[in-house]
Length: 160
Image (cartoon, rainbow, N blue to C red; front, side, top):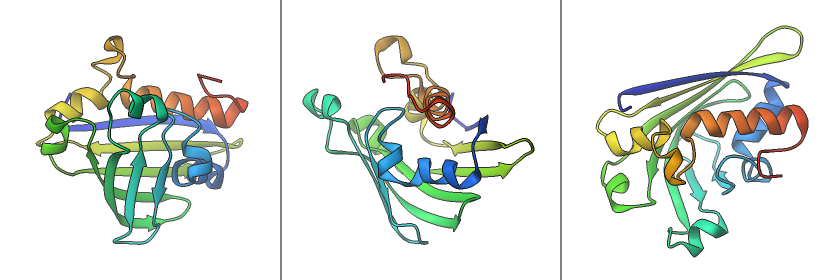
């Protein structure tokens, strides 16, 4: 599951709510792996994804993902680099490129497309593709985006 992974989900929410859910620690710590991500929303700005308390208790580093903002066009497009620091194997693969695109549709539904360019990062590709879900590593992007959709549409994420 390396190469480029593309995920698209339709969410009944405004582009601004989806943008905030991705970029705001008050929102992004409430779904997926439940670690907050802080972003300096400007080209060259830092991205720091914190591990959740359970991950830290299991030996994960405090910062599980780092990166740099490449493009910002709120609330429509965000491009960043992405490096997983959870283990030496994924950290050694270096930075990948991650793009979020939010397109307003009709009837209050928006399309969120996530493109993760994973060339040279086969371990991260398998993880983000959900290959290790049964081993307790989560379901990758499909799981994170499904949880985001649930949170925005119902007010509850999977673990609530």
